[in-house]
Image (cartoon, rainbow, N blue to C red; front, side, top):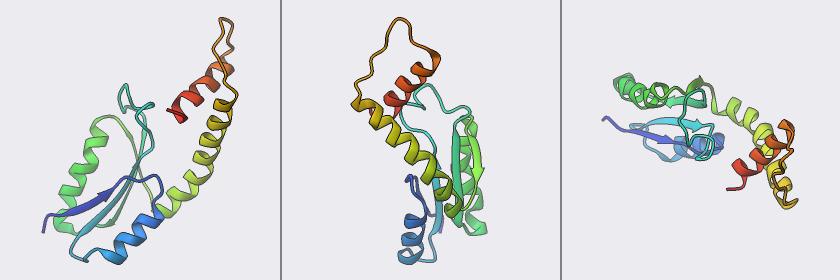
Length: 132
């Protein structure tokens, strides 16, 4: 059967576990996470990271799975095959710091000025990308 269940949530271990526990062993499972959102990917996906784990992919569906992953590779994503556990370990700290800092800065009501430093521009961009 040519069926692959793919998910693209920002956390990986929980959906992987749920799918393995609830989906038929006949269904293949692919966990993915495009490590970008609509703001950072609005001008294209080139050089943006894309993580995936072939959790359960039968040989008969390997080509289909590769075609799905290939969509992101053909758009120029940086492809990272890694376990869901490794992904969650990396993402927990980086996403927590990024989103928490962006939300705190948004509460300050920062405004652009004619004399912004590069560092201040980066902070404004952080608010823009995390709070839209």
